[in-house]
Image (tube, rainbow, N blue to C red; front, side, top):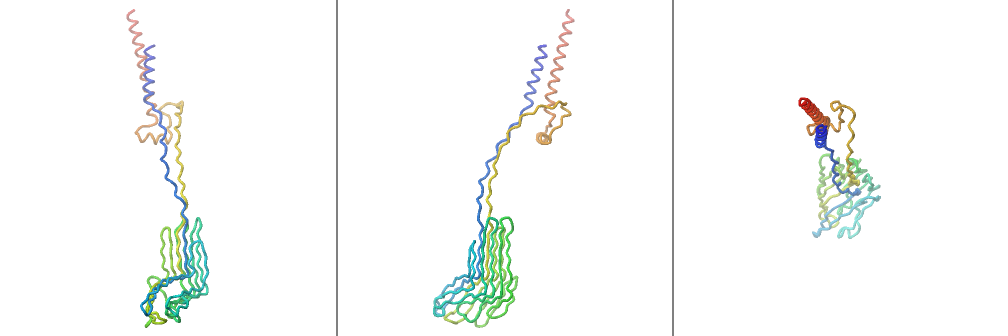
Amino acid sequence: MSVLRSAVVSALAVSALTVGLPLSPASAADAPAGTPAKPGKAGAVTAELALDVTLLNSVNVPVDVALNKVQSPAQRDGAMLTAKVDGVDGGRPVTLVKAEVGRSVAKVDDGLATASVKLVGADVHVPGLPLTTLLGLEAMSAEVSCPVDGQPTANVTAPARLTVLGRSVTVGLNSPTRVDVPAIGSVDVEFSKKTVTSSTAAASALEVKIALNPLNLNVAKVDGTVTVASVSCEKPVAAVVPAVAVSSPAAPPSAPAPTSAQNRAVPKAEAEELASTGSSGTTVLAAGGGTLLVAGAAAVWMTRRRRAAHARHR
């Protein structure tokens, strides 16, 4: 009986070494720090003049003025833009823009940044040409939108009527339109200039580049750019909160079901994990059971042999 006991103890020890307990999963790495919210931006200007005025005495006078220029959040209504240009018209204010309606609006909240401009019945002048309208337009508008979760957009409405230096002009959509006026100069007009990216949008209804030689009111030359109905926006960025990593505790080993090792069903998750090592769910149990069977058979055979030998020597 001592031989049988020794064999069983040895088999159990081998089985315990063969069947190991699963290790608990490692803790997840710390999540990166969250990204703070970034407010959007929006800006609009009804009309903007950036000119270099050269007087007859060769003195240069910069003229940088804007009508209804706003940054979000703001709204401004104005129909008149005047500026005092040193050395021009005896130092009296020069009317540069006169309109029936001029409005610039810029708005920003957590989900959207927008800007818009509306201009109706406007005349644009430059120093040195007080009686000649540089630009005459009936109505035009521009707007941009930058949603936090969408693609920015830009839209421009063409002027119902446009004149350049008194001449009616049809503006091309694909390239600037050039207007030459004898004894005065040239004007390049570009309609609906738009730029859209994944996070920003910008548009101007009209961008006019001028090179004039009026020789009037002590002005020898005027160069620069006039921009009408200009808008821009940048989308807001929502805050990003890092996910909290939680480690899962190790599940305790479950007791084997009262079925044979060959017929035991292996759960899907366990089968997939064991498949990566080339083993199956029944392999470990079969190995342990086989060890016990072999050890038991050996013990029975040795006991019977000892009894037979004892019987022969009686």
